[in-house]
Image 1 (cartoon, each protein chain N blue to C red):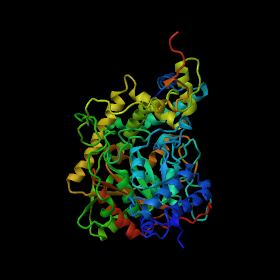
Image 2 (cartoon, one colour):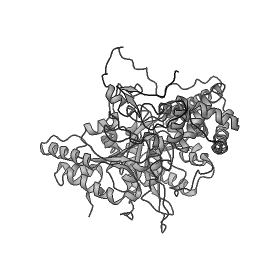
Image 3 (spheres, rainbow over the protein chains, first blue to last red):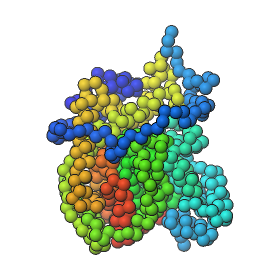
Image 4 (cartoon, helix red, strand yellow):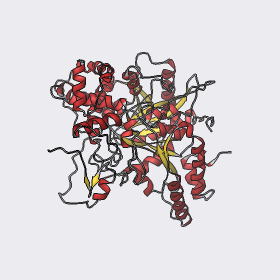
Length: 95
Length: 493
């Protein structure tokens, strides 16, 4: 499978990465090189094979549903580009 | 005379204990060497004040007879590990100036054991690369050069700064991470020892994520013993990482002297890839002979799905990366570039903040996870991963204790020599290491000789899950037989 220029723009939008017009062609070439490389996986017989879901056999660790940490609002927003009263600020989304 | 920064970690530990020198002397020797080696660009950030403050505490502890396992040992930290109050960039512009208000589990364990932080080490952006050339903070340069040449060589990647700093004596050891070969390939390129432990041996908590089902932290150091000492401190249980194994940490250092008598070492025939150089083949044969001479049995084995590991990786890893890196949105940390609305802000921020290789991988990941393609790409790749793992399980079930392979297809290459037109050319660097991540196994790279141009070459040992001890034992046999690699003289100073 290979991607055309329209698909490159669509993927970039899905990935939330702005792509300028002159970036589309080189990206298309690079993505197609990778897709051509992974094409060989089609040759493997995977009938009846379970997809890997856990790297090492282990039961999912669980803990009781209680509060174990918190009260660090100032630490959490410390690195945010824009904040107010320990809230993250984003551009207006609702008119 | 050996200067303090040229000691092995084990010898420095003994010297501190014997009070031959102080932790402050040791830290100062490193800081001076780092200052002279800035041309190698191994460190993104030096932290001399913190190093000296930590060394002072170490000296107090040593004087009081309360020395901890790594008391006063100066280390470099790959800039993928979050360090409290110390800028952590992941090699990316999108995290420029990011100051974590927490400490990664691995670095926390090192400081708990008394280690001293010298600074943050260069890496490929978000650990995506095999040459350290995708770093937003400039290329790291290898301390190695070809005989009679002054061409600058790559230290490998993604842990290029870690490998360069260890080889150039700018720290006694370094933390690193390995998603597809990022510890073992740079170790092989720089004549150092690196181990990627079993998935789950070290906590991933507080380490910037690339591909969560493949990422694993480990050390790079100058000897097998030094690596074993460091892993002993880095590893351990952690409730905050649900994939971190609830297993006790063995005495890795004690395993170094075990030898390989009675062990069976597998030589996988599928690693004899087309076009493999005669030098690599000879090195591999030599390594097998060393293990045989030390009492191991060497047997050819088959890992039939080997060739599919690399392409399957380039579906699984980008898929996980596209999800993990969705968090860099200009809201919670790092760079923000305004846009016409919130989506425009996201898009502009990520366009300006991410480098070329990172964008490429996010886009491939987005594509293979998108509607209509998920089964054809991602699910198929995960099924192939099961087959790759099964190959190893069958080899181990047939009585194999560890597997010996080359670490890399060649010695280090020059800056700018690979991957500029076709990204796959660079990806092929990891052809021998990537299977190990796909199967979650431990893998170690140990120097085994030099090529015709005088550059180091490494061999890889692959073990059973959670059996790093056998790898240390076998690697020590190779290190002893091959002789420790003589690291290059400081042409950069």
